[in-house]
Length: 626
Image 1 (tube, helix red, strand yellow):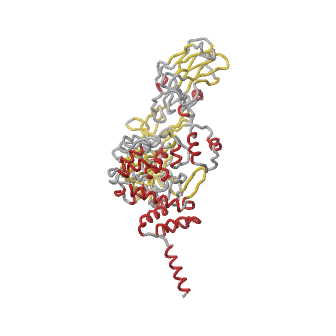
Image 2: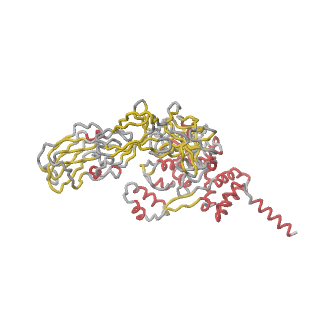
Image 3: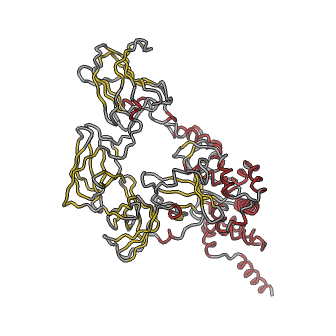
C-alpha cells in the first residue's frame, strides 16, 4: 500500500510540474534559476481566475532567451551623471574611472531574473490594462507585446512601472476617470510632459530612472523613455526603427501608439506627438522598417545567415504600414543551388549590408514591402561569405527596377565636382568677414587687411594683400550669426611661404563638439571651427616673429565632399561581384574628368583626406546620388 501511495505521489508531482516543451526548454536553460521561473508559473497556476495571467507569464518566459541587461555596476544616478558628460569628454575612460563604473556587466534574464520581479511586472501590467477605459478594446496579443514586456532593450532591470506610476500619478487618475479617453489622446498628454533630450551616443542602453535623470540620449533612448512611461500607464506603444534611410548612411528609431482600431500611429517620443508632422519619419523613404517585439520571431530560425544590421531577433517587418513600398520579383543572374532564402542588401558607404530577406523560387527572388527610391542588391550567404545574386538595382518611385550592369563596350565622359552630396549651406557664413593684422597683444593697433565681399562656392578662395607692414598677430573676424565657421585659413609671406604660429581666437565650441579653433589651421578641408557663440567670434595666428602678409587663402565651412586642388582621387565602379578601380587622378582644380562604362554604379574616394564618397549612377546625363 505504501509503495502504491509513493508511486501515486511521484506521478502527481511529475504531472503538476510538467510544462509545454516551449517552456521546458527555457527552464532547462535557466539552470539554478529554474526555481524562480517555476515560482511564477506555480503562482498563477493555482487559481483558475488567473489563467490569463498564467498565459502572460508563459509568454514572457517562452520569449526570455536572448534577452539580457548590459550595464555598469554603479548606482543609477551615477550612470545618469556620466551620460551628461559623455559627448563633451575627450577622455571617456577618465570619465568612467572618475565615477568608478568599472567594466560593463552582462546578465542574461533567464539565469538572473527573479520570481518577485516577474510577478510584480505582470500584476502592474494587468492593473493598468484593466483600469484604463481603452483596456476593453485592447486585444490580449497587443497587450502582451505593447504593455506587458518587462524590458525595452538591454537596459539594467528595475521596478520602472512603480516609478513611472508614481511620477505620473495625477495623469494616470485623469485617464482612468475619463470614460472617453483614448490611447492616442493619453499618449499625447503624457508625451508632452516627458523631458526633452539632446542627442548623444556611445553610451549603454539606459533604464527608466537613468533616462529620467539625463538630458542626453539618442533617438533610441527617447523612444525607450516614451515606451517605458506609456506602458507603465497602460498605453500600448511600440518601438519602430529603420536600419537605413535611402538618402543617408544611418537609420532612426521612433514610436507608434496602437489606437484600438487596429492602426498604429507614429510619433517621436519626447519630441512630436501622434498626428503631428513627424518629418524624420513621415514621407521619408526608408529601405525597411521594423517593429521591436518581445516575442522571438521564428523566421530567424530558418535563415541561414543572421546579422544585427539586418534586424533584431525580436523585430517584425512593418514597412507596408508606412507606405512608399512595393513587392518586387528579381531575376537571378548568379544562381546558388539549394538556397531557399536570399538577402536584400543596401549600401552603407561602399559595403553591402542586409536590411531584409526574400524567398528564392527557381530563378526568381521574391521580396515583399521594399522601400522605394533606394538602391539594393540581392545576395546569398554561404559560411557567412556574401555573393551577389544579380546586379544592383535602383527601385524608383513607380516601383520599377533599373539594374546597374556596366557596359564596358561603351564609354562616356564623366565630370565630377563632389564625392558626395553637399548642401554647402554654410559657405556664405564668411561673407563680410574681415582680416586684420596687429602687433599689440590687445590688438589696439589692428589694421584692416581685407574684407570678404565674394564667396563663390565650397572651394579655396585666394587674394593678394597690398599692405607691406609686418604683423605679429593675423586675425579673422567672422560676421554675426556665423559662429566663425571656417574650414581652412592660410597666410603667406612675400616668398610665398605659408606662415605658422600659435592658434588664437574665441575659446569653446558649439555643444562642446571637437570643432575647436585649431581646426581652421589643421590642413584638413573636412573639419572646421564652430564657435560656441553666434556673434563676436574670431580666430587667427600669433607668429613667433612679425611678418609681411602678401596672400591669404580661405576655405569656407563645407562637408568635405568637394574636389580640392592637389588631392588624390580614385574612381570605382561595381563590376558585378566587387568594386573595380577605374582611374586614379590628382586634382588640378575643382573638377575631375573620367571616361567610364555606361550604366554603372560608381563611387569616388579622396585618398588625401581618407574620405569615401557616396555611391551614384548617371541618369539623363546627371550624377544621381544613391
